[in-house]
Image (cartoon, rainbow, N blue to C red):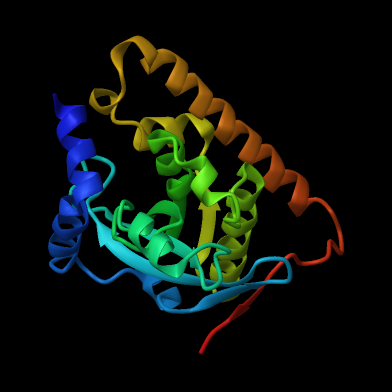
Length: 218
């Protein structure tokens, strides 16, 4: 029942309204320095960044500051109206791709990244209506993540990605998963974050690797 109510809230915009209301009463985040800025990709064009505060992923640590970065395309390759409508199914109504994080001891730790738009399109079986949509594969998540990590570090804000086990621990809400598929879904997520971990490590070890993006602060 909880899962059904959650899906109803997500597709009706109730979740967005609730998250926005709660975010207004939370402390300002260091990552908020990126709010409203852009990533520039040669292939995909301009990607807008939005940052919102949210409740701590660690229930036992209510003082921990946490938030979500929402990223979306200025030129998505599909109808702008349809793109805007589908993004309303994200946590704060902006996200094509979402990155969750928490802040502690002067450091930012990312623990989840998800192409929320692609997930909801698959869930609704609307793939044929979004054939022109850019940013639709798993590698796009990693490229966006790398861009945000790089920019925060260049601004003097220490940022990193959590271990795969911590990602699963913080990102998964068991009650929102179908019981019979819970173990499979959790293990699939752990594999995803292991792949991301390997990719981030590999790219750090490649000298003089050409940038795949640039970030503009206005």
